[in-house]
Image (cartoon, rainbow, N blue to C red):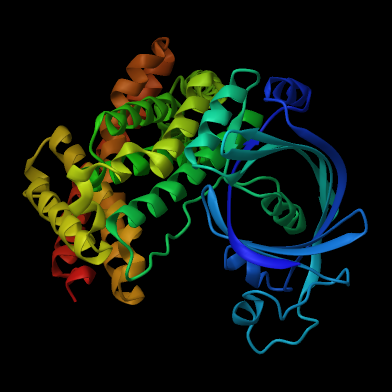
Length: 496
């Protein structure tokens, strides 16, 4: 038996102790328990991983099935076929296109997955949903990692039914929406590294994509960006993961603004508000991390530190620990779980997809939509960036926000245009953003210090060091002005 199509499913992380409660809360159905052993394959250079593809051979009850999955979000491309061997067949599905001119031995075992799967087929009218509860481990390299997941796969019926089921099960136990397959854990083990902060992945848009499809692709990437970093922060503090979580929330908010005419409505407003809450939950931690990196660490290298320096360092570290706990609470909260689930439901099945008033912008070609959106962003930055050296901190902060929004939009749409031209423009935009970021760090340092409620000696040290940093403002203003001028001299890649 073989086949290809699209797998429509939701995956959730769940504590092992809560798996029983999830199963008990689910509607009755046909139950089955199976032991599943899977071997995941890739080339030595990880070509499949780089292409966003996972390939496995799974054995259960004497049957061997080769499965290739590709894509992100609740709907993924899936190619499945029965095979005789424990090794994959490189002639099946899209593998010949993914691995051109390579011999049959190019695919090597990368890692193993062993799970006990409790499975239930739930029938509700014309809707059929398969609930799978997986408990086991992934083994790769010299390590192993536990697996404890809940999956909901739509067999028949409307996709919205998956989210309804997920809402029901979420009442029984904390379920964290996840966008990473078991292959992600295996790849990390093979690399021999602890979980690293999740960075944004490049969105690849088809030249004939509509504006609606472009929004969904960008939003899915941002949600995966949020979910991956929140998972790391639930396990322990990590400075870069805080930064990336905050960036991801702001990036998705900016995406909502860019696509406002496609997705407008009350639900979009709710998502914006919840993303603002999440970003603000990270603000203290991120600002303190920047203060330590940009002010305290350089001061440590000075021949002589100001009086009260050690007391200042201790106060900042105590505040960082408090701020890290605040981020962890947010990433573990029911509010965060609802944000992920409800935003994903809105992106995939929301009313904006059927609203007749939004049909025209929704069906516009992404290339035409992108050009107009990027032009608007560039004009706004031009207005905000006038006379940077003569404006105040608030005005420069507004220019920095517009630079960020333009960069987020440019990166989202860049795959529609020649790569080198897009990279050149984005690099110059990043240079401007970096200089404006330094100026913003100086502007926020003083109120940050005031909020620490320092004793006299620590306050003296803070004043001295912030003053030294502020003395660099004219130099960074000059750099920002030159970066803006270089950007103005760069032809916008979407106008070529």
